[in-house]
Image 1 (tube, rainbow, N blue to C red):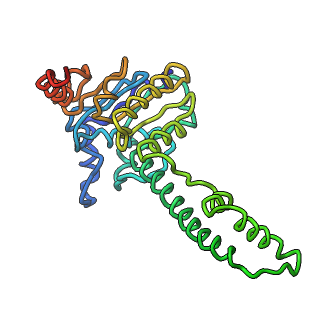
Image 2: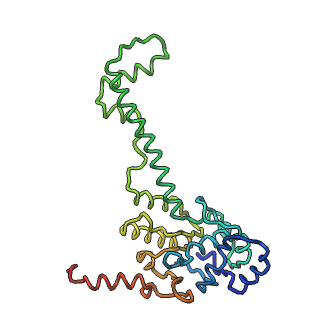
Image 3: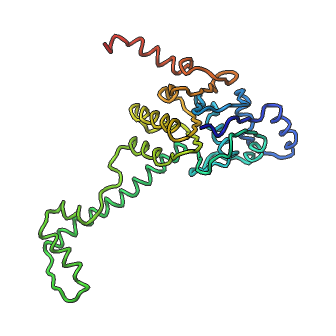
Length: 285
């Protein structure tokens, strides 16, 4: 399903006109003005899967943030928003095939990192609770306890449990297991599968961060199936060859001058990988 069919960024002429009107104001930066126009990126026509490719500073993240802000998509993590962001997005234009679903959103690497940090903080709290239960077990083994009222019943159950079981069983019975039983990469992949639903537009900013090559392959499969079976559209900023190779993805090369659509096999970084493995081809035999 295609929701966003065209998005137009202001070109250099429109940006120049804006600067003339705003010359009486003094700011250190006019970001995001002049970032995308310098790359020659003035328009994209998103397909089911569209990829913005480029190195650091190419503007691919800026483009995602501009699109997300213009369309008022859901987002969690803050981003580099300057004094001129609203003025810039007001100059943008877009075309859709029907309304943008309200569930649509932008997911950044900061969202993934925040999710993993939250898990870590939660598990650290669980770990502290576990240490306290270890000591509670020892104390209960040697407690001189007398049941005086119904209020003491829970403590009696605790002492009896400690005297009937081993320390490890006592702790497992008294608390839940750690939430994070997975690696950071597995947790990151789980985050994407939870955040991405059905029938919506999703903007993903460098989703390969924290993912191993194997998990990147699983994310590719998840994205392709979300498009094919669940009515999703994706606009992705990445330089991962695993994501660039997604079937029928439309790739915009922001490192080209001007930015343009290219085959993923023509991209410089992909060619560098290809040449490297060709040189070492015999070592794989």
